[in-house]
View 1 (tube, rainbow, N blue to C red):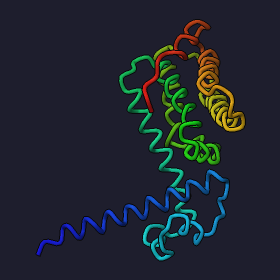
View 2: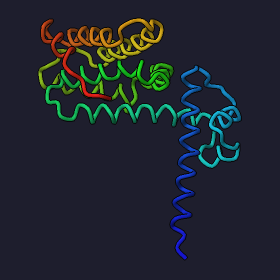
View 3: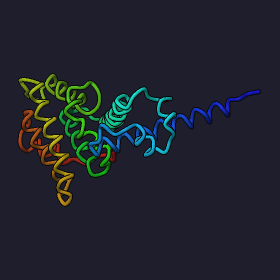
Length: 208
């Protein structure tokens, strides 16, 4: 007898349980509660304690996965939404502007990024890795004039993190206007002229 249906249902149930645990962990990270007990995580996910260990060996592993999934999801979205752009300066600007808009549209994901941003600033995953890639491509193409990529990333990462915090602190601030202004300033720092930096930082954006 073919038990494919039962196997598929079990796989879907396991996937839902894992997703619930990851989502619960992301909420706790966003709240700054990195030492939350596993029992509290499972209660928030509405799953049994035993289910936790079917997927993760420790709280630390779950938290790492929770952050990684935010990084990978956002990074994948940026790749998709900039795939048709040829100008490295436009790619960098569009990515920065889209990430900036995530802070209000996906506050939990935003706060996960802000909570762990410094840890992953030098990572090969997520937003920081793509910023590095785009700056390096821009340098090779002659679009950016940067003497030290690492120092440029310090400025870009610092601006991104502080901007996200500011948008959470000042709920009445126009997030799009703030993000676009910071993008313009970063483009000028990377070597673009005033008018071009302004133009690129105000172009129409795709939906993220």
